[in-house]
Image 1 (cartoon, one colour):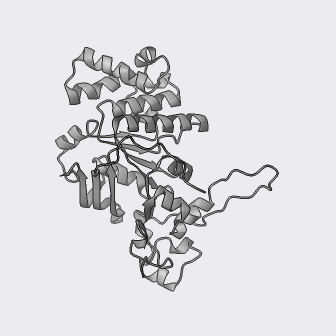
Image 2: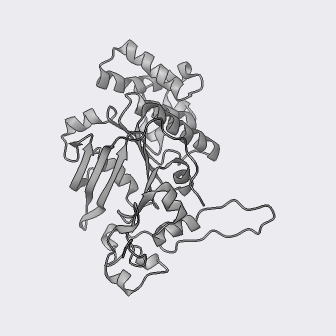
Length: 340
């Protein structure tokens, strides 16, 4: 399997617009506080796409929500920094975060029907952020909202602007969410499983639309997904998460050419592949077991109970994230360290 070729950006990235350093997220439960995201770190440059991939329960969405203070009420950033163009917003006030959301960092959620306001017309929802963040008049904001709906290729945009979310199809609702998120041309766009509820054809259209809009605006994109096919199509860089922590990081080309961590290799083996005509049908590989809960993490490597390569050391001692090849890191005792 190889990563798909992507169009070359008009200009090379010029340093990170968003930099995450040592991020821990803790959640309060009946049995006490537990770390659900541990030592998360990555950079995203203008026009660059970072994919965060892993199974459900690995901490991908919690990481994304915590970047702009949208984590559940029982959760909080307990350590680390989130630098937006140099400013640390990890512990920013509610007012500052409200200013950041939509204007500087925007988010596309998994299910637009529950994310859009059901009692507001689509055009008004897109216009609302423009009025708040850019100070436009009602008429100016409505005109810009109509332009954005056309830009995201909303069919019959003028009519759809007057409709409510329940009157649109799933694909149209997701287009409306993209228009809303990008209306103020944010520095960073976070897309959390943006095509989960859509059929395959509409998925491809929405991903192509996000990529086109990102290139046009030079926005840094953080794409949360469990689909390695999407990663191959969209990513410049990839972070693989397992049980709340990074287990592998690389460029998309390096990851698909030579995955280092057994978990990444297992994810790739579990992907459906196109069969040659006349070839025998093969069952998909299965990753036995489930992602451990934060309160049930094993003493050593969190993946060890499911890993066919695990040794006694893997069960006893958590491996550090270290360089396994130039620009390619992984947390695995069984993969030799670069130069070691």
